Length: 419
Image 1 (tube, rainbow, N blue to C red):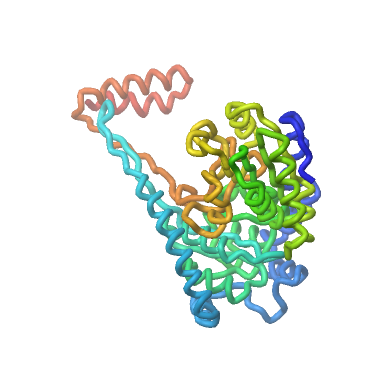
Image 2 (spheres, helix red, strand yellow):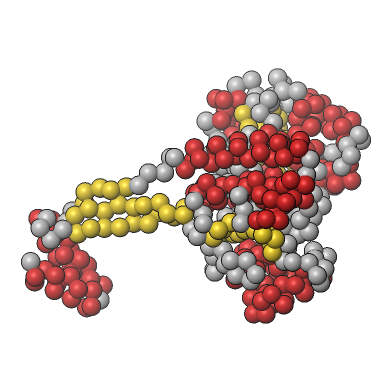
């Protein structure tokens, strides 16, 4: 368990978001739902045991409210508390966005931030249903100002429906996988989504890839991963607990460790063996740990460089100087600074979103946020009384002439003639 590898070995150990087989299967489902609508959607949902012949595909707000009151008071209060923390952070993100209105040559220009109309929020419901993901996705869309929010999840339980109510969803689509993505992308049963977000299995992710020409998607996320960077001051038992927490997500999950001594790696191995034997999710976590590895760094700079190459979904810094090390890295989905800042706190709603880029995608992508649902729309207001307006028209006509676009040149030249 936890073999020591080099940075050159890492690429061979990372798994893609989906393979050719999943893409082919997803394409069949997506095309069927796109062209045959609700009938095809119901066939696929029935085939995968998500509904029966009499079950509704779309669950509306009154039923979500009913489910909320059906769960116990402790669960309701828990969902409300977590929702408030997620909402608070999302609102803080939104407040960083400002409209622009600036003087430019010939007039004024700017941009306005406008939300999309419809968001499709996917929450897994297979091995482990995730009410936390319902909250993370739907609340973020609502805070962004999205008009219609639909949550898709297979075989939704009362807790999942209650979470959708707390998140302010308009409805729940009782579908999973590629068929749910297709339904949201093409407006089958549910409103047609402008953006589809949320994590899922390889078939769901392949479907997001296929529909990305028709609507926005947050990212193509594969198996979950965690990188712990730790020195001798770190507690091996806590490192092991965090790695196992990641491993239990999925048999394809990947816990990773960068340490500065073989002694710490050995201590973490011992803690992993001891804790794994008593873990209720042992069967899944043991398979996930087969994907785990450790690396031995000489110093902080080397560890930081490796971290940016790996670009992990989660990076947990367990160093004596964790805050200083934070400034050395830039490629990660979410960062947890210090061993008290457990990754589980991010999973369950301390604030930032837990829908994050995996498999190295953090080199260029970020986690889900209000920014996924808000688009900057630019505008300009030319002033024909502005002295710069004539110069602007001449430059436009000149560039159009260089490009051979006579119509563009004429559109500028005619306005110039009117001055």
